[in-house]
Amino acid sequence: METPTVHEPQWWRGAAIYQVYVRSFADAGGDGVGDLAGVRARLPYLADLGVDALWFTPWYSSPLADGGYDVADYREIDPMFGTLAEAEKLISEALDLGIRTIVDIVPNHVSSAHVWFQQALEAGSGSPERARFWFRPGRGEHGELAPNNWRSQFGGPAWTRSTDPDGTPGEWYLHRFAPEQPDLNWAHPEVRQEHEDVLRFWFDRGAAGVRIDSAAELVKDPALPDYDYDSAHPDGEPHPYNDRDELHDIYRSWRVVADSYPQPRALIGEIWLPDPERFARYLRPDELHTAFNFGFLACPWDAEALRESISTTLAVHAPVGAPATWVLANHDITRTVTRYGRESTGFDFAAKAHGIPTDLALGTRRARAAALLTLALPGSVYLYQGEELALPEVEDIPADRIEDPMYHRTGGTDPGRDGCRVPLPWNGSAPPYGFSPAGATAEPWLPQPLDWSALTAAAQDGDSDSMLTLYRRALRIRRNEPALGDGPMEWMESAPLVLAFRRGPHFACVVNLSDAPAPLPEHSDVLLACGPTPGGLLPPDAAVWLRTPLVEHGAQVAPPRAG
Ligand code: NOJ
Image (cartoon, rainbow, N blue to C red; front, side, top):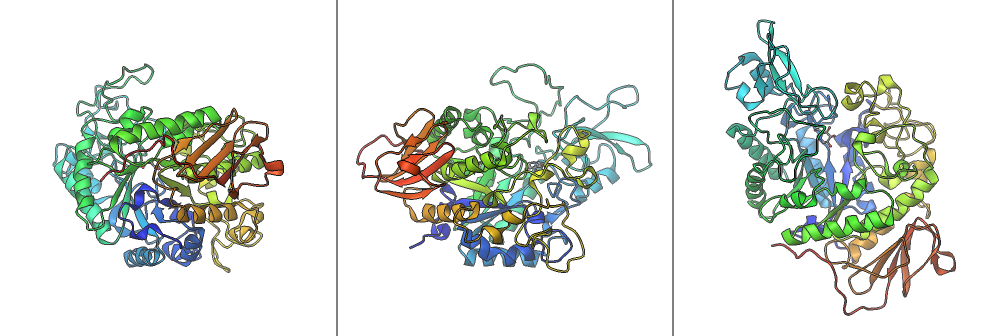
């Protein structure tokens, strides 16, 4: 019998979580923009896919200067997406299907349209309203230079000069992202209080967890010192705006809020840190429950790099008792099939570019193998909408249709992230591929490629060789197989450049990253394979799940279960 995780109090330890980028998921209203009604109509698809939870990228009211990561009001749904009542219905309808909801909280910044920032602009220098942000006088004779040299993640300076109520140039304000996303001052008690209230607001509405945006960036050195971007910094030297020790106290308070619910709510951090030990500090038992494992995501398609990443991940999670997470894609990252088809298969924001030659057939084979790898690893797994359809990155969006501030603020040097945010193809042979209803007058907000008819969900439905079928089968097995999800794993002996590991007494996953067919370990059954295994050999860039003979001993590597 299937066991949806809905009755498991520690569901986040092993869940398969599907990321919904609402704007591009399904458009019920016919305006070319995805909406909550579109998601509600597709809940059966998600239940059939077999996911345990949905993570919604921000759906709050927003001018969409950064795709909704510029929140104007956390307690309202943007009218473009629907209403608060609809969000509540969506949460409860999903739960009826055994699917939990995770909402996105963006604590580092708000939208410049947020009432707090508007009040701060009106109130002027030195006002209590400005103390919730980082307003500072400029340097230089007339304050014409930014207060320090910090850079925006999206290119250009992290400071913008404000205009005083009388129209003259005024103080500067800090924004680590776009100018429309002013950074909050987390030393301010109202900032802390407000976010705890927002957490309760969504937990009270049934959200089972929150994904915390830019979770390691909230706290700044109040002295706002210049940062030397070009030098190596000694280990342990505090960074002026990243991974500062004061953050842990904030998350301890959030944990108290999350644990105050009878079914505790999960806190999931978006934490990009090169140092795995520093990363794990956020997952101590009284802080966050889990965090995205970006080291694994950035890994090239290389057996030794992946083995090392998996082993390190498990080793750093073990002492804090937190489950690992596995993620290959999200709304910020080049689509997996495109990335894995390139010569250089890792991911690096600094090297992001379009037009790099890619072999999509090869990339898709590897993405299929990577799907079986990640779904078999210990912990929870994240799946980004469209990954189950093997969608490639769209690299030819016309410049005048690109919305991502990353593209615009770098003068187009960075291609931006819209290429992985293109509206999903559901059915049909031409755009909008069922994304918008028949007769919709508006085009999808980003143009869809003309050659996606074979990638629609309808085209892949029932095709035993499709990516959609592979994900459906894998998720079904994963849910029914007690050894999968949370729990221990043990590496098995394998041929060079082949990853093989055991989960529980009689399940094994084998992934062949070499360029020669690989022998399979002893098994009684092939539970699932990416494709044929001619002669009982696993082809290159393929993976398989096996039922193996019972093993009674073995050092299984596992994080201990936390209470
Ligand atoms: C991380 C989000 O994933 C990304 O899309 C966003 O632009 C930044 N944080 C800023 O909120």
